[in-house]
Image (cartoon, rainbow, N blue to C red):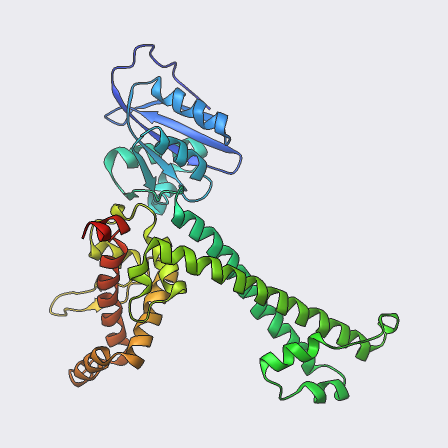
Length: 358
């Protein structure tokens, strides 16, 4: 790493950039015209974050700091900078074309982050990681993991039954999933005879079924916590037609604690990947599907639309009218997701304090 000794009397306005990693963060400082004043590496620890900020401040008045990975390796540094009232800017992945021409190293990436922050190119406001929505995100990660593991366990049970000895297979075939899990969990076998294929299969099925039951109990416990938390954060959102705890939780996590960083409902639609992308050329005027944004939020809006198509009279009337206009079902659903995003954005950005004042 290289570094220019900072001036003892900082007067000029400077910008910083940080390339974050698991064990170390590489920082760079540039002046107002983009000249590199120094680069340095610091440990990814609370003491290292403090030293990094002090080092940057020694060069001048910090106007902003661009940080890569504010939601991952840079989360700890971002929390400290925000607590110090530093203007933190989230930096997107560097442009691939530019990286091919300039190469890649930690100092190069840190300098690129600083320049991007200074220019306002490919940047955004990072999410806050110190509120109830961060707690919601952590619980949802545990729930999603438990659901995935439970589904995998059930698939393994059914795959094991396919190759089980005939008598055992016949006794388990045709059972519903709930009955199958209960039956397998109650199987009894002699552990001393585990070398026998039938006994070993019974032991394996019992182990998998009991794991499935444990995961179901874990999911139910997390659901109880999530119901209370989401209701406390935004009761109006969870009460919207087609929106439950799961969908509301996902949209709240997507928007973040500081949802004011999303400047408009159009920006929220782009964040969720439901804003159509212009794809016109010459005499052809059209839009294409947006494949960017938060795909989990996109899926949540899709489930809201499916629910309303089934149960909401206005949505069904819209489907009939647009079908007569010649639109396909996929195109209509894309339009509906955009409208739902607009509606739910208003609910997400209405805080409980605003509700009480009304």
